[in-house]
Structures are given as structure tokens and as C-alpha cells.
Length: 202
Image (cartoon, rainbow, N blue to C red; front, side, top):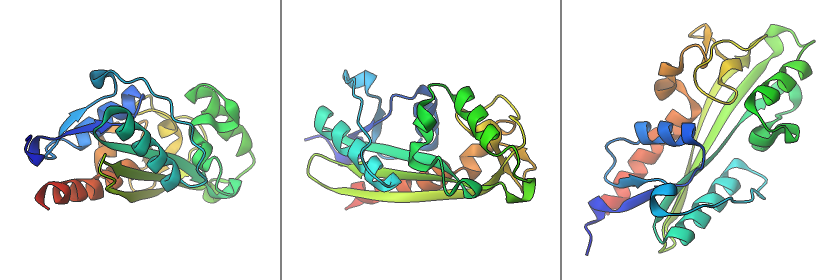
């Protein structure tokens, strides 16, 4: 029997940037991290949930069942106060726009007349774990910031060039190296690391 400490853990995402970020942030966990491509899976999960947690669980369950492995998946997004929480769970497909640059520009257009002090936003990430035995859990990370008046920096991905971190005075696009310390996903991963260690220790 394969020791629990060498179990494979499937990272359930097709996003290369997110996959790289998760691999880096999960370095050292007592699992062998594998991608869908490495186990020969091509999977598109329809996100029918109405919360980040529901969508994260849908993805983790689908990847776990397809691969017969424990799987970790996340659902994340940007919630803007002035837009009543939009784009929220629809962040990756905001108004059916197909590129990050188009979604960023649309967000700027919607906030054109909103003053800087009213452009508060929250990045949310829920990470879900599911294994073939039915064990599952979720953890959540959040970070507060503001939407900048224009895109700043070319680092990171998605809405990073628009998300201004007040204590940095910069966006994640300008300071992508700080994402591993400050981002919503980093905070969720920190909690997930503890749960993954518990999965092995129990």
C-alpha cells in the first residue's frame, strides 16, 4: 500500500498561472502534486453553484472522481462593493467576456464615475478538497483592497493589475512577488496546508 505521505494530490485547474501559483504555495505538503495533464485528464466543470464554496466543491469532486485521486480545487473571484458584489462568482466569465484584458476594461468602465474612496473590493478564494472515499472540506481566504483607476503592472494574472493593496500602495500586478504572502489564495492555501497535513497524520 502506498504510504499516505506519498499520496498523489490532483490540482484541479486548467489555468497554467493558477497551477503554477498553487504548486509554489503548496510546496512541502506531504502529497505528490500532479496536474490534470500529468494524469491524462481534460475536464471542464460547469460551475452551477451560487457560492464560491459550492463551485469549489463541484470542481474538486469532479476531478477526484475522474482521476480516482484526492483532488484540490478552488473557486475565487473579485467582489466590488460599488457593484453590489459583482463580478463575484462570475469573475472568470464576467459579462461573457473572453479575455482578462476585456474583463478588466469592462470593470473600469463600470467604475468610471466612482471616486477612489468608494472603490473598495475583496478578493475571495475558497479551496475545496475531496477524495474518492468521500472525505471533503473547504477553507476560505480573503483580502481587502481597492480597484485602481487604471491597470498598473503586468505581473500576476486576471484582475491583479487592478487590485490595489493599500498597505503596499501597489497592485498585485506591480508586486506579484507579494501574492504568496498577502493574496486571498495564499491565505486559503495556508489553511489548506494545515488540513492536508492533518489528512496524512490522522
